[in-house]
Image (cartoon, rainbow, N blue to C red; front, side, top):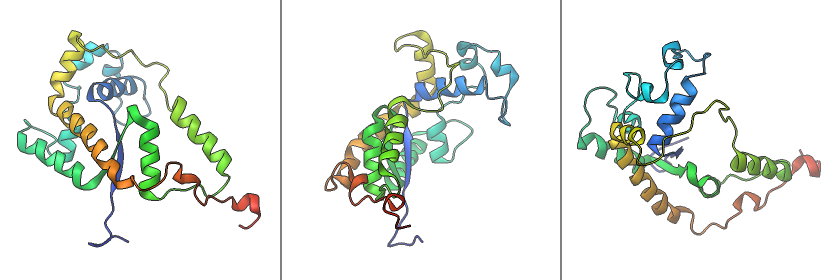
Length: 196
């Protein structure tokens, strides 16, 4: 399937590291079905969690540089940037519509069955979201001590997210010659046409 002439590319949607950290806290405080669930964390406030040894620090930089433990270095940061640049079509959670449009164009995704229903589903998912935690705690506002602490604990990821935003803008060139709404181009409905 893939070779040196036909390479694969990962696609991923990223969010600001502070938002990701708060979202992780919100999730692990109630996801008792997860093998990693910890009742001790479930009883913590966000501030207690952030100050605890359970709080992840610079998770994305660590993951992309394959350095899950120990201190991070500039070399780890550059390695993470390189992995993103070479291998990932990046998307931004705060730009869901533009992200999805780009992914559809880049990967050639089109509606294959019941385009109207698929578009309604797409609008619902991108507009309102799914898998929303009803128990989510509000994230700390920029400039507050808790926000600053989370940012400090994720200083490499904050820098990496800035790079991801830059990469998002740069990667627009990959789909610049493909029309918006590509998912509709030649879209068919074999169920509607009775051809499948």
